Image 1 (spheres, helix red, strand yellow):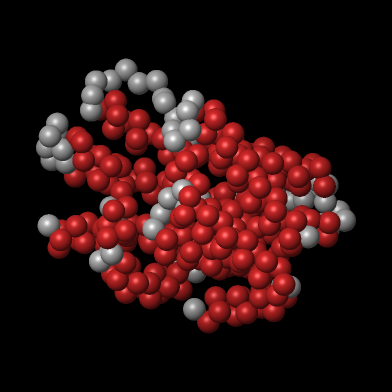
Image 2: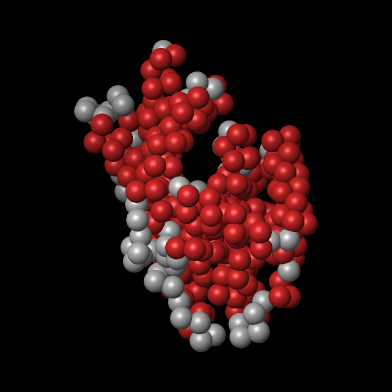
Length: 308
């Protein structure tokens, strides 16, 4: 834990206070607009699907490019290719726009298994798309004579898991408190999304377990994308400046979550970005993120159990 605090202090001491304030105010305004006017909900409700895709892209690109403009794109290290850097900035929001829309995969199954399988396969399919993107970005880094990271931080070299489990333990009281709130219980547990199969199969738990494993893969893709590509990958172009734009972008993908979770995601994303930068590994962030996700699933289940 001391190491985490030291990493954060050193990072903050080297950053422009003005830039940090600008990004926080900008992100705060986005949060206020979303929870007042429903930005994400309105984009998701657009039809046909490509209108939703294009709208997500322009929204995420606006957030990401604005944040980079604040921290100073012009200060990219001289050995980097500006063209390749901007290409990665472009494809990042494009990928996440594809991730945000629903994929209608061709399945020859009867209800409810067609619907269940579609839900469970969504996230693994989107993880495959991310791996293709990372392969492409790895080639871009090689063209700029920048040695690509070990698959964007997916490495255990020099990694110690203990501090991350301790951090998770410290967060348990907050999860317990959140589990009593109506907005939290409206969202969690996510496994209730497959409640429609309960009258078609018994026992239900194997299908719930498969859903939770698929849900867990989403956090692998989140860490690979935000801390792996947008920090460990882009830090080779712009140093520590990569962290704040990532945190702003990361916050906007929580617009469909409870307000407290959305606000905390900015600061949590920044902290995880600092840790990933220092350790050159996303495994710690994956432990924290995945642990939080499954603990919130448990908290939501227990909260529902106590209320009903």
